[in-house]
Image (tube, rainbow, N blue to C red):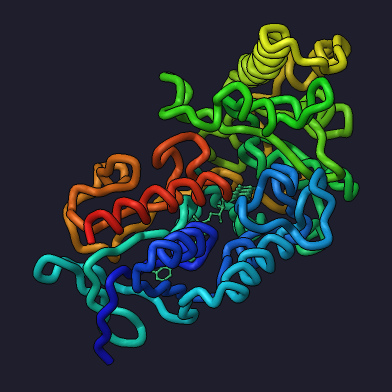
Length: 404
Ligand SMILES: Cc1cc2nc3c(=O)[nH]c(=O)nc-3n(C[C@H](O)[C@H](O)[C@H](O)COP(=O)(O)OP(=O)(O)OC[C@H]3O[C@@H](n4cnc5c(N)ncnc54)[C@H](O)[C@@H]3O)c2cc1C
C-alpha cells in the first residue's frame, strides 16, 4: 500500500490528538498513526490507582471538559484515556490505530514513512511519540530472588510478591507508589534524590494555579543547575503535598540516592538530608513567591501561616542508612521510578544530539517540514503536559499552514 498525505502525525497520545485537532482547524489534510490505541500510555504504562497530578479544570484541553468529574477533582488514568479517545471520536479526527511507523526518511523535499501497513509519503511530519519512551533502570541488582520492575510496569501492591519493597526515585511516580505501598501495609524503603515539592494547595489555590500566576509554566528553560531535579506532586487521596516527613511518619524508610550494588548490599549516597532540605527550600520558596504575588496584586486570599511549619527531620534522615543489605531488610521487590529515555531510532535523519534529543527550536527541527511535539521543555515548562501540548500543537499547526 502506498499513500500520500500532506501531514503525517506519528503517535496518538494527547500530543498527536492535539496536533490533529489544530491541523483540522487549519484545513490541512493529515493522518495520525498510532501503533496501539489512542492514549495507550495512559492505559497500560501506568499503575492502576494513578490520577492526574493537576485538577480536572487544568489537566485537559481548553476545548473540552471531563464529563462527570468535579473540576477540582483529579482524573483517574482510565478517565484521562477515555477523555482523549472521546475527544478524537467526537471530532472524527483521522486517527489510524494499530499502525506503527518503523522508519522515517527524507524523500525528495518531503518524507517517506515505512509503516506496519505500507508506505506513506508526506510533505510534513509531526513526531508526537511521547516525552517518556523507554524506561530507564540505572543500577543492576544481581539477585534473582528479588523482583525488579520499572514504575511503568508497576500496577498495584497486590501484584508484588510479599515482603518489603525498595522504591528508587522520589519524583511524583516514586513518591506516590511508595505512599500506596506503605498504606497497603508494606515495609517500604524510598531512595530520594534532588527534587522540588511544591505545596498542593496554598491560600485556597492549587499549585498549578499558582504556577500559572507566577509565570512558571511558561518558563523557557529550567533554572541552570536544576535540569536533573524531579518534581514530587500528587493528586492521590484527594491531593496533598508530597512531604517526605509525612511518608517517614507513615513508616517509609527514606534513603539517599541509590548508588552501586555488590554482594547483596545497595550503597546509598550520603545526600538524603541535603535532598530533603533542598526540597523544603523549594516548597517554602513557592509560598514566598505566592505571598509576594498576592501582596503585589492585592489578592484577597486567606493567609496560611501554618503551611510554613515543617517539623523536625525524621531519624532516617538525620542518621541515614548508607549501605542497605537487601536480604536482611526483607526486600522482595525493587521498583525503579527512575524515569525514561527518548528513542528515535526509527528516524533516519542526523538531527539528534548525543543525549538522543532532537535539535529543534520550539519543536521546529533543522529539517524543513519535520516537527516534534510533546517533549519536555519543547517550547516551555508546560510542553510535556496536557494543556502545554495543546498550545504547542496550535503554534506548530500555524507553522505548517504557513509553509504550505
Ligand atoms: C506517571 C505519569 C503521570 C503523568 N501525569 C500527568 C498529569 O497528571 N498531567 C499531565 O499534564 N501530564 C502528566 N504526565 C505527562 C504527560 O502528560 C504524559 O506522559 C503523556 O502521556 C504524554 O503524552 P504524549 O502524547 O506526548 O505521549 P504518549 O502518551 O507517550 O503518546 C505517544 C504515543 O505514540 C505512540 N507511538 C510511539 N512510537 C510510535 C511509532 N513509531 N509509530 C506509531 N505510534 C507510535 C505510542 O504508542 C503512544 O500512544 C504524566 C506522565 C507520567 C509518566
